[in-house]
Length: 178
View 1: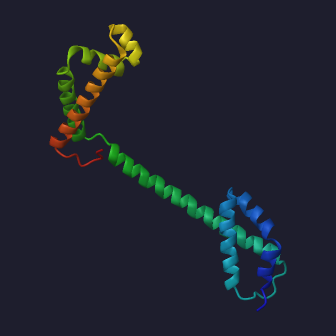
View 2: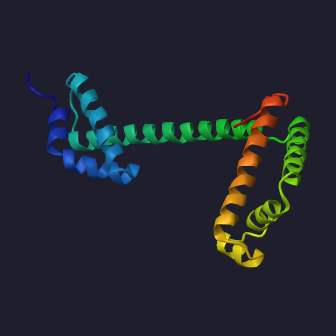
View 3: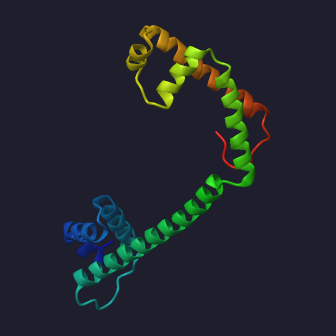
């Protein structure tokens, strides 16, 4: 079986074709994929009669495949952006129910914080709200760094358990929950 004129032109100009597609598509990997698609297409093509310039015809076919690929990718991006917008909007939308649930959770956590020992509450406040490091808190309060570490650990574990209890008993939000 002999190769068609276009298949022979592909083999003769493969590297030029790959460079052409890479420039057009901006990606050597995508260019190789499109070139392979072109090769497979040429394998299935019968000999076309009277093509004056096989190279020009071949590059025209490659350009058309690249244009089709770019069009599909652009549309795919548009669709994904639309979907992403819908999903994020719905997922992060602050509905009155979610607002009320968040306020109830904050009130519950505030009650839990109020139940901590005074020094533990102060260490938590200095760390979380004033952004002080553990050594800075130890210096300011005149306690050891181990004391700061243990009190901070107690506060955070208390908050975590309280949040878990609240979420286990709160009405389920139909939106996004972690």
